[in-house]
Image (cartoon, rainbow, N blue to C red; front, side):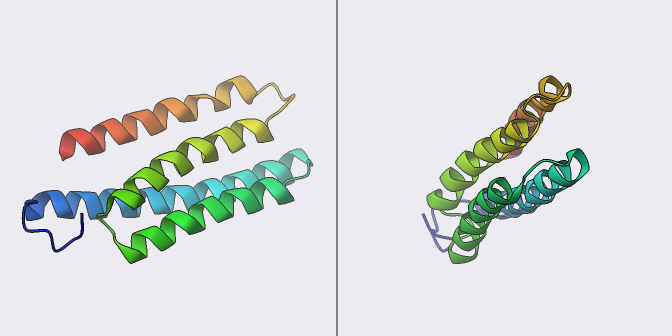
Length: 118
């Protein structure tokens, strides 16, 4: 589906655009979070940060190509799950690793609220 598809109400198109933009911002925030975790804990974070940046970059490019398309919806969902998994990975062997799993719940609630709003 493209943004010019007339079978989709404009309100839904607007919600999809805003939701996809919010996920892009969230993914770039995860990149910063991963880098900060590595710096604060004094652990290597280069490869994990680059991986998260690539994921965020792909979603951002998809968003710029077609903000309401299925490709941005699927890539952002996958990138969000993998990005949070990378955060949990950064906390390997750290007491806070268990707590970092709560980001999965937050992401799930974000998707639910976006879907209900749609």
